[in-house]
Figure 1 (cartoon, rainbow, N blue to C red):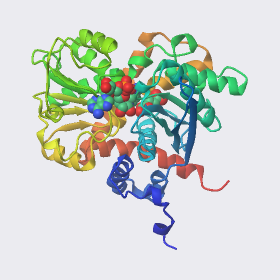
Figure 2: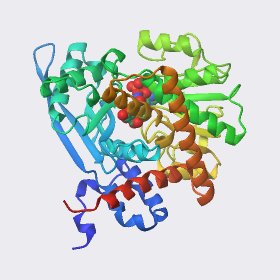
Figure 3: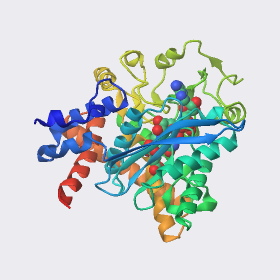
Figure 4: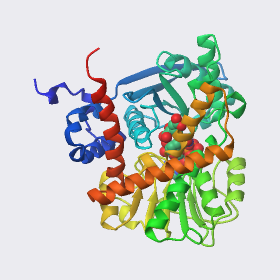
Length: 428
Ligand SMILES: NC(=O)C1=CN([C@@H]2O[C@H](COP(=O)(O)OP(=O)(O)OC[C@H]3O[C@@H](n4cnc5c(N)ncnc54)[C@H](O)[C@@H]3O)[C@@H](O)[C@H]2O)C=CC1
Ligand SMILES: O=C(O)CCC(=O)C(=O)O
């Protein structure tokens, strides 16, 4: 039987959903993996997929069922690691891709983890706080069998935060019979969380943004920045760019696109979002009528920091930025990558650009194990160093091999994963 016949049907990229995007990225890196390419099939199959039913009692007494997932894509280099997403559009294809990008990312910045990701197909905006807590706790109990401080360590992602992590930690600990702070990262500081974790992803985006700008001869002071997604990642990145003298000229979230040529007041915008749930109605700017016009905004740096597959063949040719910093996971399709390359747009890929979050998650996990906590300055210094070194290493490979930064980052990440796979051998 040929190996083609052994591929489970759900792993075949019949559509170009997030998993299809990831498979195409792996196909693009394979010619650069040398002898390790014989192991590449490992990267095309998640190690473990758990699909769970998550029933909860609604506040009105009815019972509702939600579909939850935890995918451990690869554990060759260490325990699974990656966030948990609560979103109405979560699919298995998406969680598989997100877990695989964690594998590549963790290896690319050399934190000792494999890759994992989880999610529930639910719109948390439609849940009360009590319902949110119940769905989190039930989901944690259902995936309890495969997570743990040495097995798989969840963290925040879209629509989850430190409060959700606290409930996950508590539920896991109750099931274990003892407090296990190291089972999740991104926790509140009072429960073993790390200083700097909440800001870490946005800070990492900003740090690699400065490196990329230097390569392009672009001065951050006065640079025009447009940000899609104004949550944990996009909000922090926007603030740090503003503090460095850049002008954030456009912000798009799920509800609206606000623009201001002279630069938006990011602190005021964050306060508005905290009060109203979105940028819609912000008095300090104007609003685009057509959402798609966001992509044609006149800017130097574009930061997609929302969801996957936002930059596509539909809009890539309209982009005027010279640098794209992928705060989101998987925001650019391979076909859009090709268009951007033609236009000489520098794309700093997700697996480097947004790796600041998991890097400080690693610091948090180490601090929990040693029960010794670092200062915020120590954390930010170490984070900055790791981000700069990762960017420099990937830049060098991209120059040497004349490939994109994405392929270069995948060369670094996939090589480390497959070397570990090969060294471990196959048989028990
Ligand atoms: N939180 C973290 O530490 C990390 C997050 N990421 C990635 O960054 C991205 C954003 O995550 P977070 O900021 O944590 O989520 P978040 O939940 O804090 O914020 C998400 C933002 O995206 C906006 N959004 C949602 N749908 C949208 C749409 N269709 N168009 C435009 N905006 C939309 C929301 O309004 C919100 O402003 C995701 O791709 C996530 O996987 C990557 C690395 C770490
Ligand atoms: O902090 C972590 O463990 C994972 C963050 C995450 O989900 C990501 O990098 O996409």
